Length: 230
Image 1 (cartoon, rainbow, N blue to C red):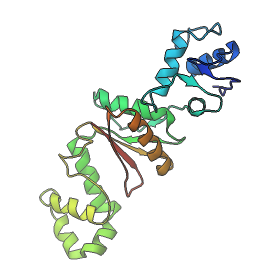
Image 2: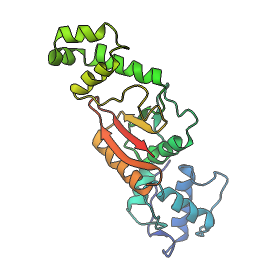
Image 3: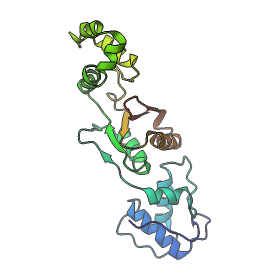
């Protein structure tokens, strides 16, 4: 998709030069906010105006309905890119979780991807055990001693509370199986790009959509950015 370039603002109470309106309409078709069959005559009509508002709802609680020259809306439209979802990631019929991802997705920094959404209890347990037996084993042994580690490792299921405690003890956040927000269909993890920028974007979207997002956004020790919905 070619970059959106306009000479004057487009939207409610704006100059709405016909060539600029046509450029905006083409850009909004390109990002999927207007149906591809739409043909603009250069007039700011209901179709274009509603598409501008819908686009701004990703990051604005109350859309102003205007695309200013070199403004935030033009910037986000030009950076708009649908990010990938990991092969084993599931939203498992949780429409609110899917909606949260759809709101955040296109304005995340390039290279971002969804690495986790809904998880079963079994998957949560598998991640916990992998942290304990592989990812952070050396650090856990160093902190808790080899003997303590070996005693717990004899029966990971029976000693699950201790496993959780020890993994958390070396700084990796993790919920005990059965209690994770992922298991409730209320959390998403991001990877693949600069965490600080991902956090900035998620917080922006969460503030604009506070009826859906809880506002909790954290960077975990393993590098992923975790955020939650209500």
